[in-house]
Length: 342
Length: 287
Image 1 (spheres, each protein chain N blue to C red):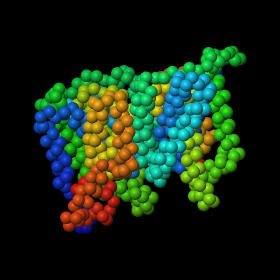
Image 2 (spheres, rainbow over the protein chains, first blue to last red):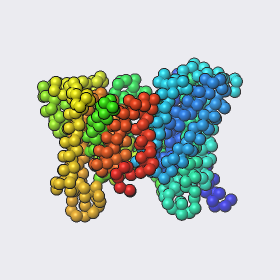
Image 3 (cartoon, each protein chain N blue to C red):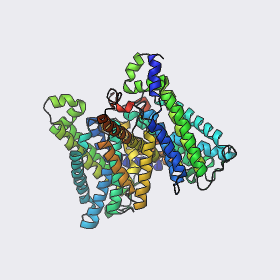
Image 4 (cartoon, chains in turn green, yellow):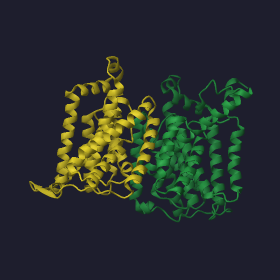
């Protein structure tokens, strides 16, 4: 095996933590009293945050408009259901493709922008779409949303039940498949080129990397994953409302990703777990003031774990390991953000 | 025609209001590259301070305005000294998230202190109602806003162009390192600028309380407007901020009246187009 093959193979190796992560979700399904509706929501938010991570963690571009693609996917799935296309898996794929194409178009538009200008353009595009959806009452139901989206049983066998058992497994399986694909892609030369452009775009250009093309591709990819997450939400709740693509949601997903940790593939899920659980907890304590605690959490995160929870956990794990003599080889030679959880 | 002029007038006064609320953010962003989204919370604070001063202390409306200014200025100064100054060297995203967190906290904190429902402000008789001017009916309060806003803008331009402190601020905006090399105390200048900007936001919030709904969700509603004004105008450029504020104010009011189908979309479209053509804003300097 040539050295560069070995490099990619090493990066793509499965770790015990990763396997444990997925098994934990499976175990949660069998727990008595598990709140499957909440867990499904966490998975959807997690996948959505992963889509943001593709852009922010792997390409270094922040956006205030990610919810636009989430919303496009959510509404695509909803409108398909209304039109009588009730088969869920193909509905999911179509929604992701629609959102992905929109993302590629947006990628062409924002090419060359960064920093505040990029934030403002993505925010503007997001707000334009939100406005459009609210006004197109015939297509989208406007403010009231699209209720009663009919979704056929998965593979014609498993109906979406009230307890959300099918919805949970369906969402989990979709997340797993998407993460498998993303994992393979990000550990390929394409993923490496993305990270290169994140760290030093000009140098990558000098090396002959097509960074403009890659940007369009990764925007499309990120939008497709966001759209898929949105479609999952529509299919499991059989409802979609304009909040799916509000600015609030775009801000929330950034918050989730940063709490979890960007550039580590699983940070989005960890952030969603922390965010949704705490939100539920605080809202149960006091429905009016829970935003205070979310804000405080955010302030504390950026003040003390600037990279988020997951990198902090990895660092903790490494520092516990080192005295035992099993030194970590790569943690000391490359920045933690570059690593995938091992 | 009369309606068009009234609309234009309404848009202008709204724009001036946006300018007063946003100008502090523009200067601090131009100077320290510090993206303070919680600036809009300072505007809300000013509004609540004015209302409280009037209701609890019986202060008249016009006297409550300087109180709102001073109160938010003091609060901004403490906030900057205790917390924000530790985040100057960090990247955009860290600052954005930190200040969004502060914004979330402000929403709940204000709901806790002043209650979740909206607070009306009682303006004096002389500022209510309308006047007829050359066949156009103009709201008195908007006239007052236009006058007060113009005064503030003039005072700012004068302060920046003609005073010693203004010269220091301009030096810091132009080249922070060179200014520090010449012996200017950057930290102090920035702290003071930040406090004045926060005070102006508070003043804007107090002025806005009569026109825009003052409730704990105020920051969430007007954050986007403020960001648009600052980025479209060009950071650190007062004239640009004024231009953008008026453009956005007029665009919003006139657009919602004449093209109700497009509604709020017009200002977003304007923002996208301006940012694509001039990423540094209308009057900003290229990075």
